Amino acid sequence: MQEVHLPNTAELEQCLAHLSAQEAVDYLNQMAEIASQKFPQRTSELARQAYERALRSGYQAGLAEACRLLGVGALFAGRYAEARTWFEQALTLFDVLGQREKVLHTVVNRALAYSAIGDYAEALEQLQQALDSGVSEFPALYLKALQNLGIVLAELGQYERALRTFEEVIAQATQQGSELTLARAYNNAALLLAARGEYTRALEYQQRSTALKEQQGDTYGLAVACGTLGYLYTQMGQWSEAERAYQQSLALRSKVGDNRGRGYVLANLGQLYRLQGMLSAAEEALAEAARIAEELSEHALQLEIARESVHLYQQRGDVEGTVYFLQRCLFLSEQLLGERVQQALARTEIRYETERQRREQEQLRRLLVEWQYRALQAQMNPHFLFNALNALQYCIIRNDVEAAQRFISRFTELMRRILRNSQRGLVSLREELETVELYLQIEHIRFCQAFSYLVEVSPEVDLDEIWIPSLLLQPLVENALKHGLGPRGGRGKVYIRVVEQQDHVLCCVEDDGVGRRADKSQEMAHTGSGLLLTEERLRLLSQHLGENFGIRIVDLVHPDGSPAGTRVELSLPLCIDYLRAGELLLAGLAPNSIKPVFSP
Image 1: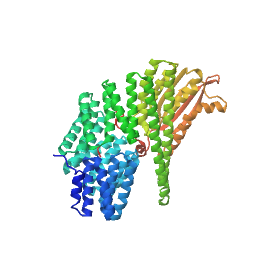
Image 2: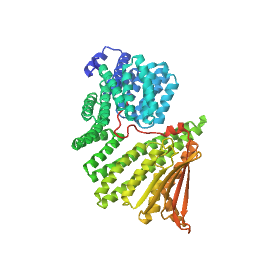
Image 3: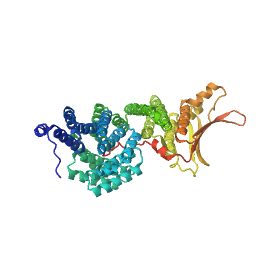
Image 4: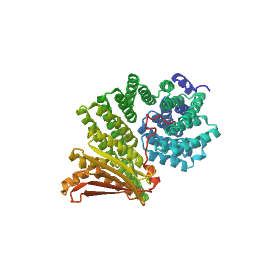
């Protein structure tokens, strides 16, 4: 199939000269719709002309469609706040005009704008609204809604549900003969299969997607497909095929003016070069990606580049460069968390006020509790990271290069885990214990192996089926090291034990340190701000899920009554409201590499 041709400026003016005012608006909107599918960089340009002509002529239906397409164009360009504004205007106009299909189409579009800024709960609500409002009456729009639902579910880490959704789209698109939708569903399913490590099947799906896009002359879609192929080949260790696919994706994205997409592909290319030991080429690719990310204020991409730069400088043996980019990761992750938490709090408070008279205070109170909980979590992550970074600086001050390198290796893995979990309300107990062990390894280096530690889990405990707040145990371990063993130069033992007791799991963090003193000032010092935050998080989580998350501090004593250490006991329910818990799960895709982009 030959590539669809969009008229250039001269051709466009010539064509419009023979059309009436309304016909010209409809034609421009039609061209903008085609551009949104295959040449996204021209979507805003064409929709803007339609918008201006519709305003002058008073053509309301054309004005509404131009607003929707301006939102789509802003979405492609990464201007998410602007996109939501245009979608709101379009919804208002379509609603007045009684154009139900267009209303639903705009709602489906708007969901991606919320997803793009990390507000997955709102995106899910928007898509559910569309599905509940009868979008299935419109087959093409129904598939679009399902496709976007799969994308949001994938971003939430619900890979099984997302994959089932994409496979439903594949089946229905095949039946309807909708090749464009089919190609994008294959692309999205391939990414999920890759996330599960099923690279052979993922590659098969992606090759189908690529072939369909080539047949359709879909330049933008082919650029996305080639980027995904590069990602898959990288995961499979097929370096030359990966580089060829990435370079093709870069060329196609340059052709369609997708600068944001170029930034992500360049970051992936930098990773590929680093994996091959081509460190100068990796640095050059990452520098160009960083320039694009800075130009577009794309903070998520900046974070990915900083994280990859940590690995690059670590591989070079450049401790100073590694520390710099670790600090940058910390700054950017804190910035992103802060922005998203504040946005969510503001939206929830507004909704609380506007819905007060609709007797929905209880539901919205729970939303406020959820975001209070998230705000506390955002405070916890920087607290954790700053302490770990201080430990690294301590190794450098001692001029212990070997220890610093071991430290950096463990810390980058720890950073990867923290960044992956930074937006997740809950993680499995297995993940949490693995993170705690990494933290203990780091502190073991800092304290020059002065202490010993043991993590023991009873065989009846299913670590994958028990969910707890992320970074819940780490502050307790930190407290044991800092206030229990710290006064003795770090000498002593830390014992972590997990056992099942009736309807709950007991997690104990015990140290044989100095214990808490009788005077209140020392007792408060041993408690620590991290432990106080942990208590508050558990209180809010208990409110949110309606379950009892408990914490108890036990002062251990020797037979003669002298202090023998401290034990902190966490009581975690075995069974929780997994629907509510699922709403808290906000995980990224493919944490081991820079995330490729789904096809809406």
